[in-house]
Image 1 (spheres, rainbow, N blue to C red):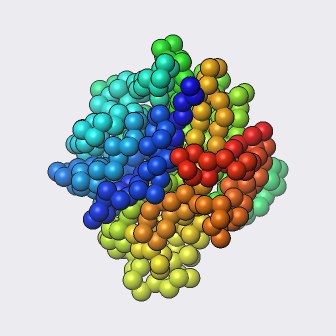
Image 2 (image 1 turned 45 degrees about the horizontal axis):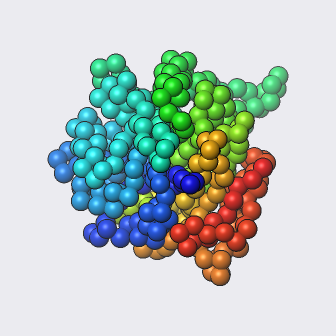
Length: 386
């Protein structure tokens, strides 16, 4: 019997009726054998945001109600430490009380990188998580709480070698931290030794532009695949990115977000000195960029570009050899902040399918999105092929 892993990107629930937050994709997640997501925030009733961190990512523990559908959630991201060590401990405990196992953060670097192993049928699936996007000092140390880091140092090269070009943006070259990679590689090899399938989750990438997959993401994906990962799940962009197969290992570079409530984000901007209440749409774009995060006129609680309402649930089959077919259940996030699968009869089906295909074509990944009319849990499923 074939088993299925369902994976989504960033998750943050902050609403008066949290139980409804995942109702649109509940049938898909409930039908899978292992469900993964990245919880990008803090669940606590005790601790406040640390100085400089946004308050809008620190939410009451009541918002964990719908998260019981997840088997494993990564905490390796740039918001897990927004309420300090106490907030991290509360988040872990709150999710554990809901039956959710966490990975990618802990009371030490060893704990943060310790694989979580879940039995799926007769197979043992190990999950490792790390982040390239994090606040300075948020990484876990030998005896210090924090997140599992996979950092890089950015260097800047001349845009045109041998030529003076004042004002032209430099080329960014990201140099991977050897120590971080050595620790992540060891976590993957340790997981490989005790599991049949190894899944690696990475928080990475450029959230300021659509479609882009950075050189850092590509390098890390190649290294992670070579180290023994069977599946790579990326997130952070808050927008879908493409997927490709590296030596047979599926790499989902960016799974977008499946629910991301930020009703208090305008207060964060006001506290930072931005006069968002009187700023015109043009001034907001100038200040934050077209794809930046700021309150949109039609959805103050969802401060993301309208294109990011197109999202998906990734589905990966486990077969006798490990990883089998890969696909996506295309979804749209409505104005109520709830993601719902898109029906083939929906007027926006062609637009959503075109968006998925463009996410593969723009970065030239060589992956095709094929619609064979299949379904999963009654929802449209498209397949990824080379």
